[in-house]
Image 1 (spheres, rainbow, N blue to C red):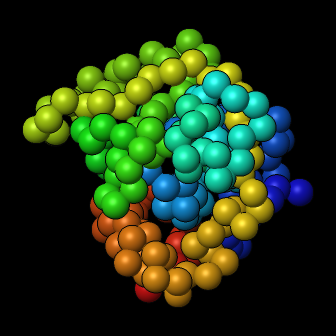
Image 2 (image 1 turned 90 degrees about the horizontal axis):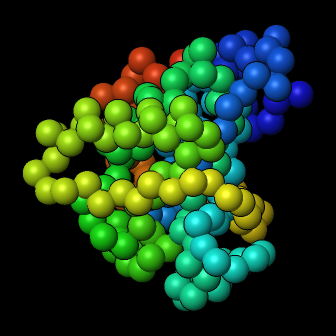
Length: 202
């Protein structure tokens, strides 16, 4: 059975689907707690996992990644059904919910582990990333600094980092950083959200 389902509407969207038809997207832009919460409420998303990718060490953990000694970025890995939500739309949304013109930081989070990075899993994804970034370039007043890298390996983060917002939305970070971004989704990307997600940012 599909995991990480946030409501009946998403369940009905994917329950009869062959899970083998999903695709995978991997990207990072700041703390993975934010991205996890945002992509978890999208229609067509089967699951979201927080983790680490893009570095030079094996089996990294949060402490080492936070020290900036592994080369890994905090990322999310998204399993999605492309006939419900396209890879291009995932990239557009990703570019809208963080600042890709900042180098190695997002908000108060600083370090290479918080860099803006898009991984491609095949040549088609690489081409889509290139086209979407070219499409979005005029909307930014500074150069886009998002790193584009071929996907190698994803290391799932420790369990207490998974579904961080949904486990305790009243934590200070959740209320002050994540919730405003969920409200942004509700206002500007409502057509991409599962039906019950409209109440999750309240």
